[in-house]
Length: 151
Image (cartoon, rainbow, N blue to C red; front, side, top):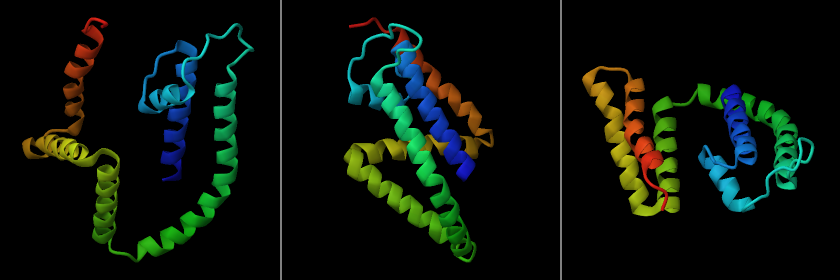
């Protein structure tokens, strides 16, 4: 789990760095940073990185330094407790919390989209094919997004 979190954090940080380099957001994290930072000027040179990028990188490094020892301590305690717990109960509790947060953030529309995504995710199981084939379902919306005339 720690490695998964590290990879996800690295991906998000790289996505933000790419935003500052090519001025296009390629992920939700980069889009959120773009909305937070606003419009920023192109770099005038290799060594003149924007201060907002430097602030984000500094915050990421500081958070990593503070969180790493804490995660190691908490992970041991949680692992001991979870190894004796009922995995179905943990999964159900996780699902309820995620659905609750989804409702708080997006309302009924978000729950509807999540329900549709769940149904789409069940199709490969019903057809006994691999879920990777669902990636093709992203092709049409992405193509329409990039082929649509700029308005």
